[in-house]
Length: 419
Ligand code: LLP
Image 1 (cartoon, rainbow, N blue to C red):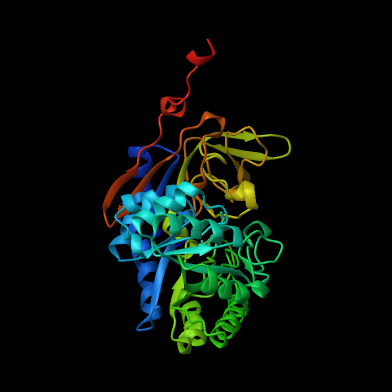
Image 2: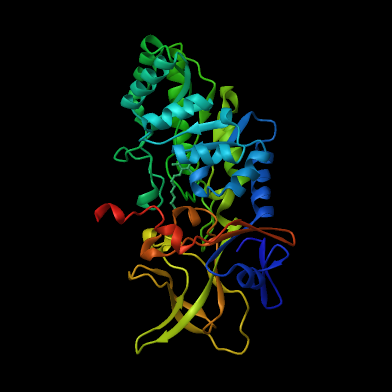
C-alpha cells in the first residue's frame, strides 16, 4: 500500500481523511484517489529528468477522470491518447492540444480530423494504411501534420500476454525492418506528413529494466540508420510500461528507469518522450467496497462484497493480484480464509482467493492500487451503475464523479420504436 493510504490505530486513512467516513458519505463501491500521491509521482518523473529535454505524456487510458487529467494539465504535462473520447476529455480538463500524442492502431476518420483541427502535437502512426489516410486528410485540409512512426521492435516485455505489445505477432507498430524505407517514402512522397520522431511501447507492468533497454537499442539503431539516410528527427518516444508493486514485484524505481533512458539517449540530442500511465496513478487509488454477506459452505468461506468485476476488471481479466484490507481492523474477530467475491453472475467475479481476513457483514474493505485501469475499465454489466469517484487532498474530500443512476443506464433506449 502506498504511503498515502495508512492506518492510524485501527482505521485506514487516505492522506488525512478517514476512509470509513468516505464510505459513509458517498457509499460503496467508491474509488478514492490521493491527490498528493498523483502530484508526487509526477514530480518524481520530472525531477528524475532534471535538465534533460523531455516530455511526460500521461497515458490517459490508465485513468481518464477529468480531475486526474486536470492535475497533470496544471503541471504542464502532455497526454497520450488513443481515441476521440480521450481527446475530448483532455481538452475538457484544459490539457494543451500541442502536447497531445495520438497513439492507437485504429484511428478513425472523424477522430483524426478532430485531432488535426484542434492541433495536437503528434500522431503516432501504427501502419502504412494509417499513414496514407493521415496524408490524404492532411492534404484535404492543406495542413501539414507532425507524425512519429511507432515501431514494433519484437521484444518480449516479460509481462502478462494480454498487455505485451512489442512482439511481432502483436497488432501494434510497424515492423522494425520496414521503418527506414517507410521514412524515406514519407520524405519523398508524402509532403503533408512531417516525420518528427519514432515511438515504441513494448508493454505494460514491466518489472525489469532490460526489455526497455533492448527496445532502446533498437530505437538507437533506427535513429542512426535514419541519420545515414539524411533523415533527422526531433524526438524519441519510449512509451509507457513501467510497472508497480501489487504484491511482491520489484519494478525499477522511477529514478532508475528515467536515468537508464537518459543515459542511453542523452547523446542523441533528441527530446525524450515517455507515456507513463500506471506508474503515475496505480497506487494513488483504492476501491472501497462493503461486505454484503459472509457465506460459508462446507468447502469455503466467501465474503460477498458490493463491488463487482464490472467495477474492477483486472482480477477477472488478467488474474491480477490486488491487496485487500479492512478499513477498520476488527480486533475481536479471528481471521479466516475468504474468497472475496462480487455479486456479478460469473465465477471470474472474484477479487482475491484465500485471503486471510477478520471480517463480518457490513464491514468496509479496500482493494488496493486500483488507480490505474480500475474505474476506466468499468462497465455496466448486470445493469450496475458505475461507482462514485472521490479525490482526497490533505483533510479535504472532493466528489469527482457521481455514482451513476440506474435511470441513466437505459436513458438512451427507446422501446416506442418497436411498437
Ligand atoms: N502508451 C501506449 C501506446 C500504451 O498502449 C500504453 C498502455 C501506455 C502508454 C501506458 O502504459 P503503462 O505506463 O500504464 O504501463 N489494462 C491493462 C493495461 C493495458 C495497457 C495498455 N497500454 C491492465 O490493467 O494492466
